[in-house]
Length: 200
Image 1 (cartoon, helix red, strand yellow):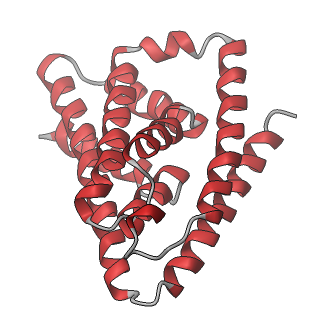
Image 2: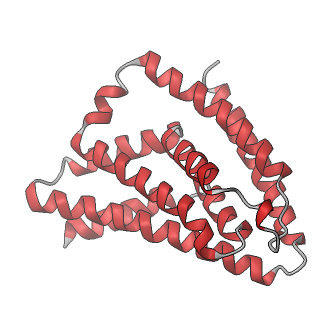
Image 3: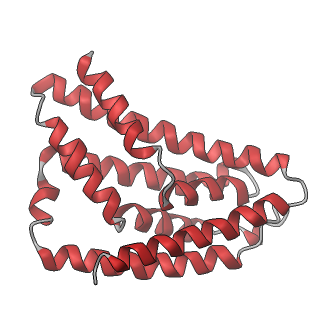
């Protein structure tokens, strides 16, 4: 029970802060014509988080992060993609009655996987916090800890998607979503700039 509670509290602590991944998943719930159309992004983000958690617990990502050139390459790729994604979100229209304004499935999957796997903060948090915390447990307890972290991730992303869909229904004119999308794009660009300053 301790391992499960530890996993739940730890995972919520890491996933709650506003981040690019959360902003993107929420925006898909708000901009897709139907809730089910936003699920590709939601499932992709949850699967990516599951992968990162498993890698962290089993220690494989620690080996990867020992290579400075690989860390630098991930940072640069992440920054470039964030700049591009901010531009796409800035230009997208919040009108929910036209499916053409929503991202297609392929773009949802690509964007969601990129903001998850090319996000240096997500990688470092997962490896440094969850990976390190998992060392406290062995056998069944470690399994329960890992499953608790994964469950929180799935529940959180599904909840964000639903919250976005609710926001869309409350905002009949699309004005609130316009402000949200512009703010989201600015937030993503600021994140990219912040990551860039960490390189120089």
